Length: 212
Image 1 (tube, one colour):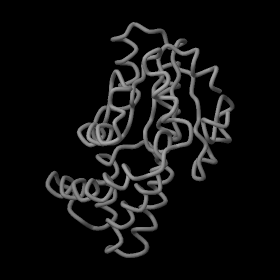
Image 2: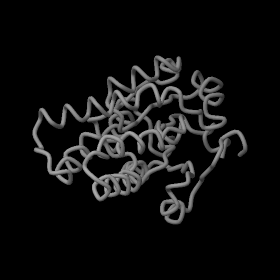
Image 3: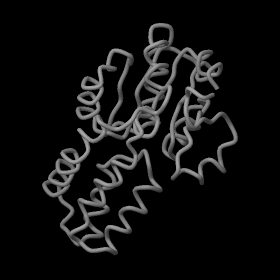
Image 4: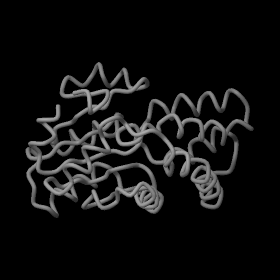
């Protein structure tokens, strides 16, 4: 696993579930946001969110508002996105590191080119990276609303790096698809909620980077 990463000129990193163990934090926030609309709605939100990791809140919130019977307009979507941000930012910062990842970032960012590709809004992820003092590890940072497939393609084109010299580390279907769409080797970070992807993906995978 480590050898595969070290042999790559460019490494694309997802954030939640890959750098920080913060997936559950996001799930809790979505559920709390829609809990006032009753068990049926928040159960539906929880199930959808967990099975669609790596998808932006800008796509999820309008859908969840419709399920809750709320108007789906620009103002309401912005209101709920802001509420979600207030619930998750500090909680994400305080989440535990995926073991071994912080050490790998600090040890290799000068030898390899790291690109962050996340569904977290751009301004929010930049704040989080600064708070964690790892912003300097990433040559590029793509957050929502930029789609992951577009982000990977953009970075490869700008840097003139072949997909064969790149890997994408992710934990969701969106990460997997973005890697496949760009012919980039996918590395799966196994979690308790991505068993379906563990079954589909036959390539490199890890639980904790330090143990591989």
